Length: 228
Ligand code: DC
Image 1 (tube, rainbow, N blue to C red):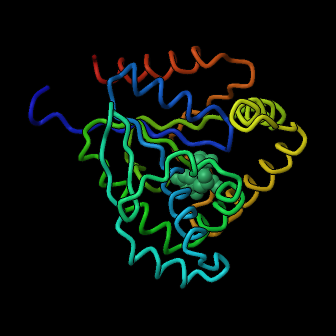
Image 2: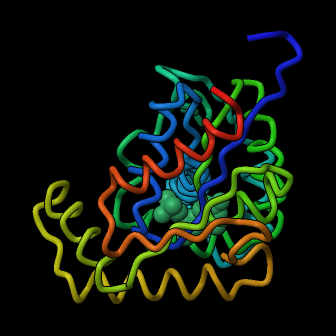
């Protein structure tokens, strides 16, 4: 790679359980790019707020905590991870309290401004695949590789409930559909950076596609454009 090779960013947005995480991780592996899960930062902030018993309904308390805490990033096997005040939240990011509160944290404009700036700094890890809700619209709108992954709500609920069954032993599809619908509504109707299809983004509806097909399409397009 030459020194003046500019960093490539593949931005992958979409609603919950649209297949974003699996697809983004595999695209990153195939391209040998570093994978960044932006949602994990919003979850990390939520985990910290819950743990410090901050009232999430009081944005100024959340912002105060955010400005006091120490957030550090590192890459391991081409995956960006972080610690907050020296602690790795790990699987706690996926816990139910975090899941149920994260959309409220993500709706606070000051939290978004802070995390968007941290996400923009991720190019220091080199070429990246970043997944989220506003990567193509706000974080890296100039990227030529913008994707919006979607799938029908019932299919997304089915996929997420399978995941939850594997992790927690339970995963009632109708409850999951309920929770996903509530979160998507919050994410797409919030005032700051709502979930939207970015200008110039390619929409992929994966309802009747396999993960492999989606990955292959994105990888082929990026390789063709970069001539790699
Ligand atoms: O992708 P996820 O389920 O881990 O996202 C968790 C929450 O964070 C979800 O409510 C959407 C929000 N989020 C966001 O607002 N912007 C991002 N770039 C990523 C996630």
